[in-house]
Image 1: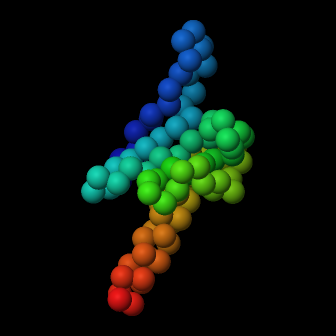
Image 2: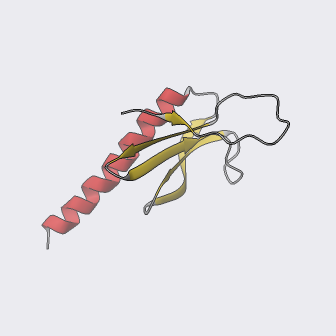
Length: 89
């Protein structure tokens, strides 16, 4: 799975450290960021339609790769729960 830097920078911002990453899986976008205004200093997950700003319970000092792995784990759990509900129908 290929993660892409999707960090947006303010005009004139000199620090260009990546703080947001995203990947696409069959049209589903999974994104992690450690600079979200609603969750400063922590890694957050965004993945529509399930997660708008979901705290991954990781401080921003954790490497992006760890946050990406945790995001995939959380999304897999949600997808598994959805599949279980469909199988119960």
